[in-house]
Picture 1: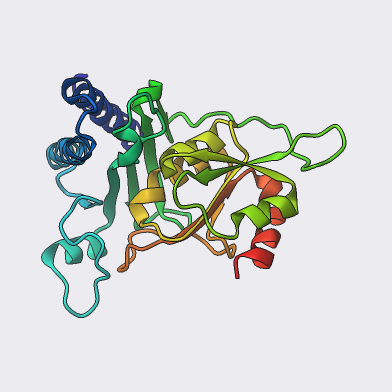
Picture 2: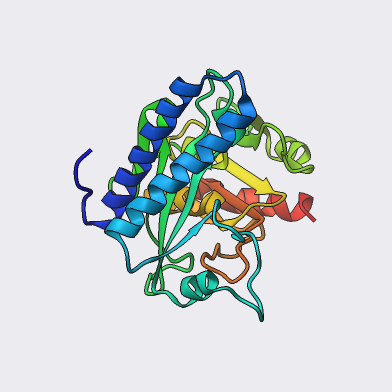
Length: 276
């Protein structure tokens, strides 16, 4: 794919595409007979590629990757050199080399992703994300902040006469326990999907109207998709309505809501009723 572009958003797109190509090649080479081996190899191949390219093209930036040793630890009094670098850096790449390993290892599934996001200390927004891309390799597309999709302007009127029902993306394996009741409350239809990146990408492209998660995630699960979603003009927050924040000492970011702006107040009100 040649030398990468120098602008950060375009670089994120280039990097996500590079990793996606490598993952598709690995799928083709290994097949699906040993799902566990394919998942492990996918995590390693994508992580190593992204880390290598970042070290080459963005050597002054810090990195937080799901596959880094100790990445899930909350740094407190005793911190490693890697943690100090990240927490004091002005720029941090937050990456999930393979989001949705389960789906990646299942033949025919396309709801898995590669996440590449850039956090900046000088960003004008609370979440601090200034660029990002979500690669959907098996769907042959990359969504990025450099060319954010034009979001469909149609307003949604849930359960209204002549209108259509809200479509809520939901986890295939770990949907929040309250989500069925919330969906009934707002007149929504649940649409099961794989990775978090694939679900938020579906909101970005208008295939669904919202994604609600509560039950445990980390910064790399949502950073790149949230960067693209907010660049597109979507609402993104914690389920209590507070701001999403990245490059925190504790990388856990357990819940979020990504939805159309015109649905945000309705869904946040419903979350108050059902998520407590």
